[in-house]
Image (cartoon, rainbow, N blue to C red; front, side):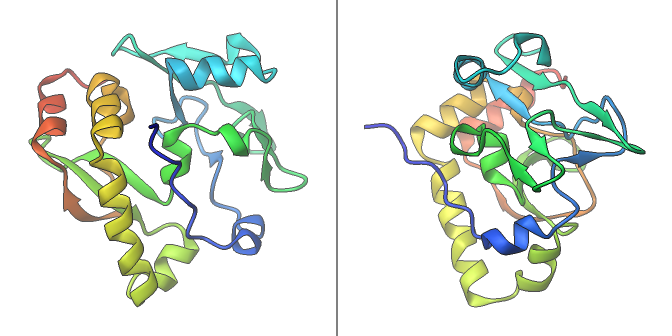
Length: 184
């Protein structure tokens, strides 16, 4: 039985009024979404242009190429007029996780899970009981065998350390093996 998708804790109206997600300062931002091969093929089967995907150094994932928009860059699946994702129902794990982030710790010895405090919802809700309970759901989800194996195999899903991300969990031993892989 496949692992169900992770539900989004941020209310839809909050997401649709935000100006943080899916926007990037650089065309080659390391924060642009990563797709596993399966996720990429699913996006392509729903009409995504195959040239939008750049193969990553793990050889098993691709990062989306961002498109210029005004004075910054957008995910090509983001509609700035509606603030909606055009592939929301089949968006990649990398996007499903947000505002949570998989990354190496500061000295690159462990794989950790954190919450991006640049997300306005995270910033205001982090200390609430509901948010804290959701953190445990995220941990449980990431540490399912299916998801942790996928991450270990496609280690480009593990981002570089970001000081705006508040670490709340060190991941299981299976994912710690990904630290031996060279960073993309």
